[in-house]
Length: 317
Image (cartoon, rainbow, N blue to C red):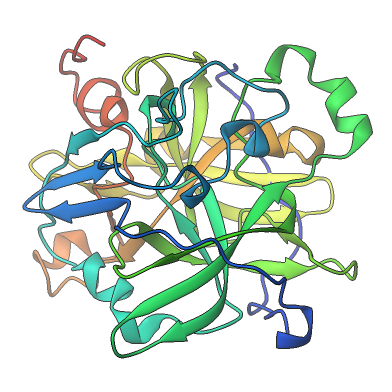
């Protein structure tokens, strides 16, 4: 892709919920959870789930790809295990406790396969059963505008994590929160079943430095950024720098206060995914960390932490 892009789009406001009147019908049940996160490991797929548990990969890109979404030829998810470091300060698991889930919310979710190890899928919740716990949701599908597709001939393989989406008549239900990453600020566009997801001020995102389609999760390269401004023209970003000695603590305004600006029309194929973050108060690891971010290690690109920001060798695909 490119090294020096990014800028913002409009002031952030609170989430809007889709009313129950707009709830799409028909849920496709699955019998087992898709992803497990335990003892520093996340597993995407057990080999027993219904294919409808996740939308097909082409639903979130501009063209159909080869079998890189974690689905096998027989329509099941291929089991994939990723290891990630334990958090040092904030428990992001608490942000995903069952009581956090409400009808009308949109959540980012982990997919299966090497190119979808990050939270790039979105689900709109239309029902939550507390006991036994069960989340019923409908999938959001990328809905790129025609003129955008014509402008992106060389970027058509990039998974879309922000832009315009529509709620489709394809759903699933989950008896675990392990597959979920974080609550999403999704805005109604005024068109039924259509939502807009854009980087919001204060969020942390991974942006592509180099995109390699249909490849290992270690092949693509990323820059981690904080969204510091948005206008209708684009998104303004501040590059984050990893703090030595900590697993996933990042300093805002790093790299000499380097700022990136992304034109609005480039947004959908520049941003990889949003990363849950916690702003340290100084009480967690000393006053020297006040104002720094601890990021959710389950969503931090491995290459960003180990090779790009720590100077260590990148593992081979």
